[in-house]
Length: 244
Image (cartoon, rainbow, N blue to C red; front, side, top):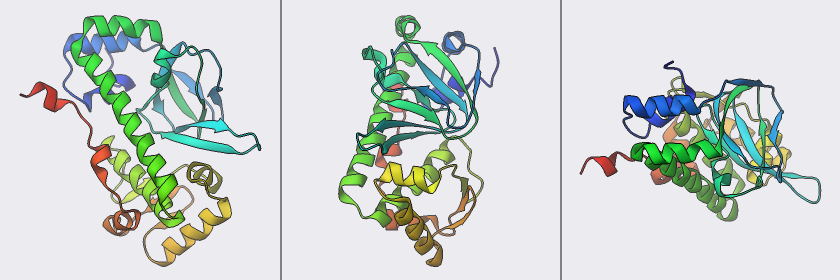
C-alpha cells in the first residue's frame, strides 16, 4: 500500500491507525483525478453519492446568490475531505470548485458504511472530521456577523496559517495563499476594493507582507491579536478517547 495515500495521511493526524485501518482507507480511495483551476467539482443540487479527498491544490465551497454574487463558505486545503456533510442528503447543499490545479480522489458514500462496520477507530475519526468542519463553519459565522473587516481578514489569514502548519505545509512564517482579492471578499462578505485596502493597511503596519500568492507574517502573534483569534476550534483530535 502506498504511503502517500492522501486519506491515510489526513487520518493519521487524528489518531493511530492499525494496518487494517490503513488498508480499509486505501481501498476506499479510487484512482486520483487531475482537476484544473476554477473547475467545478459539483454544483448545488447535484446528486450526492460520494465524497472526495483533496490530495493536491486548494478548493472552496460556495452558494450562488440571487443577485449573481457568490458566497464562499469553506476553504479546503490539501488533505482535507470534501462532501462529507452530504452523507445524509440526496443532493449537494453547496457547489465546490477548485482554486487552482489539483488532484482529488473520490469515495462512494455507500462504501463508507463498510468502513463503519469494520473499524471503530475510523468511524470515530470520520465523526471527528465532521465535528471539526462544523467548528470551522461556526467560527466563520461569528467572524462574519460580529467582526470588523480588519478582524475578518486577519482571522481568515491566521486560520490558514495555523491549518497549514498542521499538514506541515508552512515554510517558516510564510504561507502560500492562492486566494484572489475577489475570493477573499466572497468569503468575508467584503468588496475586493475593501479587501485590497485592508491588505495595504496590514502591510503598512507590518502585520503581513504579500507578494503574489505568498504571505509572510513578520509577527504572527500580532496578527492573531488583531483577529482576536482563539484557537480552541482548531485543537481537534481524538487521542483523548483512546488514552483513558
